[in-house]
Image (cartoon, rainbow over all chains, first blue to last red; front, side, top):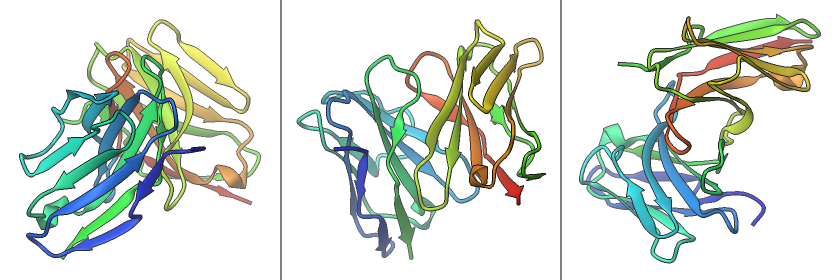
Length: 113
Length: 111
């Protein structure tokens, strides 16, 4: 596609509910990233994929967070047993490997109530 | 421990004048720096970058300056236009994939 597509744009979850956020990267972009942006903060790195391999998951805040990219294209970020502190915008980005600067999607705003 | 800091949360500038956005960092291992622009309800958009081996990079109205000894970089926008009104994030990395972002500066260009 022309850009990085994320769905849903908005998600309201009750505390304790599981959620799944989808990212469809730019066609041909091998590298895929997830970032979390809390209100008033800059984006914070969560995890990085090259094709289907998750090469870095050091930013995932707890074992309730899980990301996958089984076929090397679409990726899903799953959050289990959501907590209020998980409320944030979740940004997905993609790029060619080794290139500086990546293309972000518009994000999914998650609100946990 | 914030490795990348943008100490000015907001900045207002008259149309046609220069906008200067500042960013400080603490990690001397950072070798690449970027600026992103973000409009409301959109993802950040890559604007301009600079490698640690350079001290200046220019792209049209946008120039980024890097002062490694002071661990400081700045983005200059000349002339500023109302469409430049957005939140600007600086980001730094060691290598190519994992960026540390600042908290952003909201620029308002007044017509």
